Length: 224
Image (tube, rainbow, N blue to C red; front, side, top):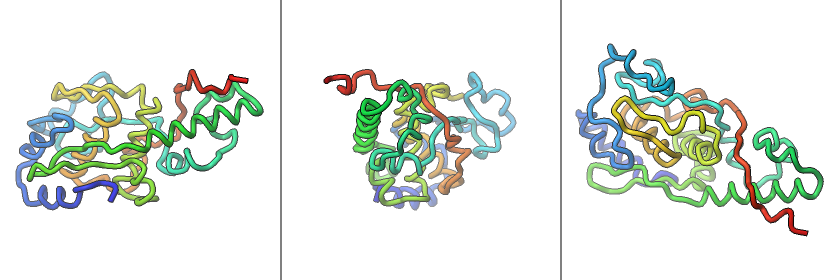
């Protein structure tokens, strides 16, 4: 399982009438301890980075995301040679041609692969048991659908700078989400609570097929 302990966590939350109690116990990000009423939506936008009420019911915690690449891109980005098409995603590659381009592309693919080799802590269930997601396993075991598949792509979009215009973001609670690990922990908590976005809602996760200013300064490809 790409998300370890996920099903147990969901079952426990279903039998817990207190959303606030769960939020306090989710320790990957402190999130919020009180959920604002729908009537305060006007106060929930922080520097234009939070979305409106259509995203998540009854709270002000949903982060508006855009410019990310879809899970379909990330799934194979480190294992298949995408040709020069990858330069439209990572424009810094357009500076290179021929064998230098191929070397730079291969090195980038290896960096993407290395970024997948990680277990990320998402929080704890009510028994105090940790819940993790493995990014590589999420793509291998949940290809094409599901929460793990989407969260894995969200994480890589954050790591490789696709969400730089949206992170860090300060929630109306005062908590700040700084990076990909904190972001997917937050989205995971919202899904457990509300259960609205376990499918392939590209707009919710910001999968708008953008590009990034990310570049690799030292690849070793210039060594002759």
